[in-house]
Length: 122
Image (cartoon, rainbow, N blue to C red):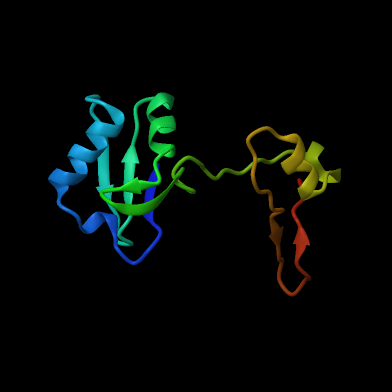
C-alpha cells in the first residue's frame, strides 16, 4: 500500500521511529516492511487483507492528511500472449474477456520498406 500526503508536508521525512510507532499502533505487532520513496510517500508491505483494511481506513498519519491506495504497478506484470485464435478479436474484447488483463496491444512489425502490419497471430 502507498501512503501519500495530501498537502506539502511529506510523510517520509518524519522520524523513522515515529513512523514505526504509528504503523504499529494501526496495524498491530505483526512485522511489516516500510520503504521511503523519493516522492516523500511511504510504501508499506502488508501481511494480510485485514491490515490493508485497517491502513486503508486512515485519513491522518502523524498529523498529516494522507490518502492510502494500492501501489499501481507493484501488483501487476506484463506478458506476451501469442495465439492465432485471437486474430479476429479486438484489443477491447481481449481486455474484457480475459480475466485479470488490464491492457492489450497488438504487436506490429515492419519488413524492409513494407508498411507496418500486424503479426500473423494478431
